[in-house]
Length: 380
Image (cartoon, rainbow, N blue to C red):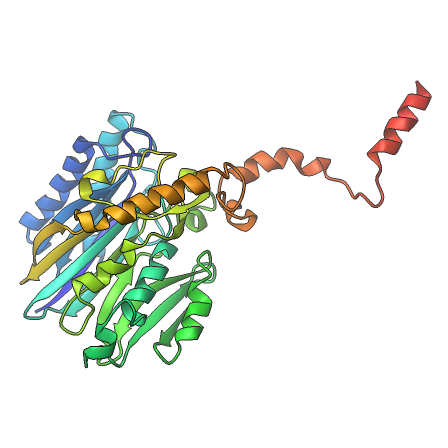
């Protein structure tokens, strides 16, 4: 059975501040989406939350970029925003950058990850959902899942994986993409995706038969809106088992935290902490960045789950290490490398602060403030 698996997320109001979602807002979003399922427009649906973001998980037969499905998500977020505004939640509706839906939520604020596939006899799918970070947060784990045999043993011993995977990499500034096949073009891949502010992995395909293996949201809110309106808080869908990495191989990259962009005001680097659903409520300096992993079995399009895959003491060490890394970075305060580099800060609120200093910069080769002071004293 060929189905489409869609995950569409948005931040439509934080409770309190940017730390969590309000139950009434989540319930309203769920109510709208469930109503569309009852009408027969969806096979199944579910809701995930991470920090102050809500993700709608949907299965259907309408294909990727369906106006109907995207319209369902937009309507649900609009209705949820009404509740958020009534409760005076912070940033109510902040990811809805347009007054009207225009057939597709891409470019309007919400993040989108979708894939279409023929359902296998057993179809395990993992949805990753992060808060306080950007789409490039997925670059490193996707590389390890699908291109690093030290992480994924199946690349060596599974015949269907042995030919490797092809990565579709997007330049977020130009909108152009390139496909690179691994292991043959592994070094070319790393040359790009190591530049996390410019390149993000959009899709991963199996070389054996071209089957899609993973897809990620790549929307960058600051580039859409032209200013900082919140971090992107990306989602990602990864298929597992039977010719794809095993569940344990997919989760393994998260056992060792790494540094990602985002955190406080979207302007700082910080460790990505894997947490259970209940602990996905970042509060320390509005962080550190969090990620949850929701596991589903898809059966005739029905969502069996989710199971909370990071609710496991095996990830306690990763959480402890992330806290230690957070302490080290917080010691830097407003200084780099905790604060993002200047080129990335152009898409935050900092430029508005710097505008008032524009007319006060001078050429030190032709201008001497000391000389002016002496001349002023002579006149006195």
